[in-house]
Length: 587
Image (tube, rainbow, N blue to C red):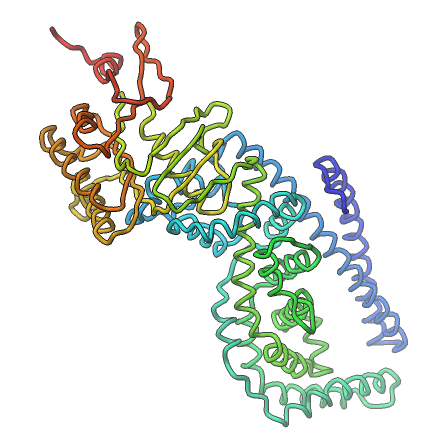
C-alpha cells in the first residue's frame, strides 16, 4: 500500500520540485534559442542544419512535457498543504474564509433558511470540499432534500468507506483545486456532441495527401531537389482546401471545454480507475468510467489532446506545421470520430463526477469530525436523542442534550428565559436531521429518527419590497405547515417563539388553536414560547408535554447551564437583562 504523504514530506518534496522547475526553465530557454539559431542557419545557408533543428525541437518538447508534469505536481502538493491548513480552521470553527453558499439560501424552503445551512458560520462551510460551482450546487441540493431514509442509508456505508481512505479523498480534492480554474459553461460542448457532423467524402483526399505530400516536399526541398517556389504553391493550395473547414474548426474549438477542466476530469478518472471499492454504491459510480474497450482516462486524454490542438490552431508552431501538412483536416476527422465513438459518455460522466465531489466532501467532513455515531431510522413516530450537540459550536464547549418524543406525544412546549438555549436546541435537532439525511453520522451518542419530513419557522422577517410584515411572514410559514398537515404528511416541526408579532391574548389563543389543529394530523414537533400560560395545556391535552431551559441570577450575573429539563420554566430573566442593559425600573 502506498504510504500517505505527511505534511513534512509534502513540504520537502515541494522544495525539491521547485528547484528542479527553475532548472528546467533555464534549459528550456537555452534549447529555444538553439532551435531559433539552427532554423535560421538551416533555412538561409546550410540545409543539413535543419536536421539539428529537428533534434533540438524533439528535445525541447520533451523538456516542456517534463516541465508541465512537474508544474502539475507542484500545484497538487500546494493544494494538499492548503487542505491541511483549512482542516485546522474548520476544527476550530474559524469559518470566515470559506464560501458560505449564500446563493443557495431559499426563504420558501421548508427548513433551509432557519438551520444555518448556508451563509456565514454555516454547515455548508464545514461540509463543502467541492471544487466546482456545479459540485457545490449538488451539495446544496442534497442538503435541502426532503428526509429520505432509504437514500440516506445507501450513502452511509459509502461515506464511511471513503472517510477511512484519507489519501483518496485528500488527493481527489487537491486535484480539483489544483487544476480546475476558471469555469466555462459546457452547454456549447454538449450541444456540439448532440449535432450530426457532415464529412463529405472528398475531405479524405486532403486528409491523406496533406501529411504525405508535405513530408515529401519538405524532404525534397531540404535536398534542393525542387524549387522553393513549389513549396509556396503547395502552401497556397493547402490554404484553399482548408478554407472549406475553417468555420467548422472555429465552431468546434469554441465549443470545447477548458483544458483545465479536462485535465481535472482525466486525473480524477485515473484515480477512480486505480482504486478498489467495497461499497456497492461506490462501485456503481466507478463502473461508469470502466468502458469495455478503453479506460475512461484514455478517452478523456484523447479529448484533451484534440482540444489542445483545436484551441492552439493559431499558435506559430501549429501555423507552420499546418501550412506544410494540412493538419486541420486530420484534426477535424479525429474530433468527429471521437465524438461518434465516445461523445455519448460525457453527459453521464459530468454528472457522476459532480456526485463524486459531493461524496468526497461528506467523507472529508466525516473524517475531520470523527463522526462514528450513525443515526437510526425507524418507521415509528418516535424521536430519541442522547447527548445531541450542535455541529457549529466548538465540540469541546458544546453542551449535549437528551430528548425524547414518544408515539403518543405530539407537541413539546419549550419555555425558558432569554438566551438560555431554546432556539439553539431546536436548531441542534434540525441540523442533525439534515446530517442524518445526507448519510452522515451525528453529533451525539444516539439519534433515532421517525418517518418524518422537516419543517421550521424561526427567522421570519419583514419584506418592505413586498409590503410584508414579520408577523404576516410567520403566518405564511404556518399556513405552509398546515397545508402539509392537511395532506396527511408526517412532519416534524420546529416553531420558534410562535406568533410573537401580536398581543399576548391573541398569541395564546392562536397558539392553542394551532396545537390542537396540528395534533389532529400526523405532524408533531416543538413550539417555543415565552407565554408560560401555555404550559397549562399539558394538564388539558394528553399529547402536550413541557420542556424548558433555566437560568440563575447571581448578583449582577445571569448563569445558564443550557441543559434541557422536564416541566415548564419556573422563572424568566428579561427584567434582569433589561436592568443590565441600563433600563431603570421605577417602583
